[in-house]
Image (cartoon, rainbow, N blue to C red):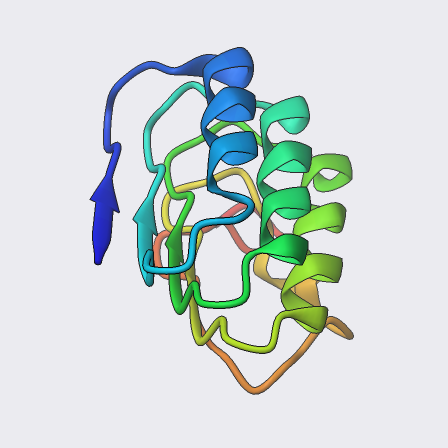
Length: 119
């Protein structure tokens, strides 16, 4: 089952509400939260949801304004997820080299991100 919330302008508060509701969901396997004006607080809510959710395979959080501080809880949650296979962070402010050392056997889709030199 897929939930597509692309471009709903939920912001951190809306993302937090959605994330809390999805913690115990047992059928959702794909979640698109791209382009929702999510910041660090929203990403922390998503990371917490991932820690509880045991069935999610695909997560798209592309096109949100997350700092490195906001990404760190997500990388920790991804490391501990038994089901997550793909995380999309396309066109974000994340620098690909900042994710070094947080690898898990995942298909991390990082196209469109700035590298450390800002290219």
